[in-house]
Length: 195
Image (tube, rainbow, N blue to C red; front, top):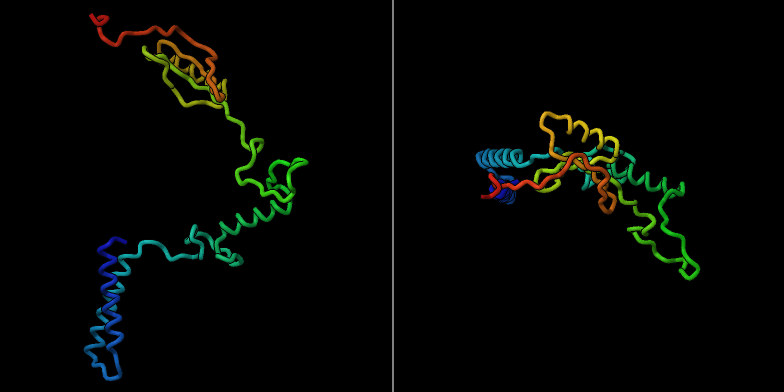
């Protein structure tokens, strides 16, 4: 809803409020027809302003989501999440963090972020790179599989316009060059050797 629509709708509703206060048992039919026209105008403005569907749930996150009649907020998505959390607590698969040591108090609050042992290990990738005459640059999508990355570089070397040199870099918290195909030669970017 933009500002102009909001202003027009507020004005129409205030006018209807004034009509409501002025109505009485002796109101003439012309006044009632005027109220009817203003009411129709306010409904038309409201119809133009409302752009979303009618909420089917009482959930702020999923107002038009699927309905679960048994849920407090009628939201099937949130209720499914709550049921999964309750089920994991009952089945014992709920993450409990590290076990306490002898000097730890048993009522210690667990961190919501977990401990180092709970965090996932860094993932390794293989980066295919090509020598562009000045520096190594990424020439394809980083791969999770080394053999797939080597097959990609083999296809690049067989392409109609292959690069001068290719290399495969292993990324795992640090970088390690695994293999180089061709010879990277530094090329001066100025024609004729900058004479």
